[in-house]
Length: 147
Image 1 (tube, rainbow, N blue to C red):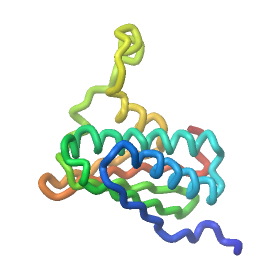
Image 2 (spheres, rainbow, N blue to C red; image 1 turned 45 degrees about the vertical axis):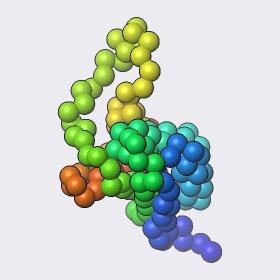
Image 3 (cartoon, helix red, strand yellow; image 1 turned 60 degrees about the horizontal axis):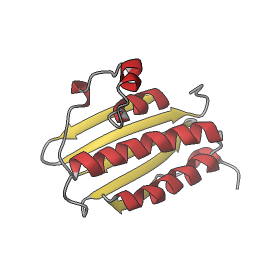
């Protein structure tokens, strides 16, 4: 059996509905644990992917639950790269200011931390949007990561 680093890309395609988030979490859990990530890192990845997919469901596909979310996971060079693609409404993540976490808690806000969480939990977060065509979020985490 041996060589774990030669995992081909695995892919999951689901409709943009909140009930599919559990399937996505299980998908990430199974791949990340099969290549040797610690559970804490896996939990961080699951949370980041969950946030990305929740944003797609809530914002990109607002009233279109039939929209597809494609999740591709590739493991190479001791790094897990998760690509999430949707065909919904695009947005500019750089237009979202870094939250003031203390102020956020003082105001008892709920939600709105997705991008901040993704950037905090993952080693790299990259967002590509081709308006009218697709949006793509790349999340990556190294097996040697300290996060």
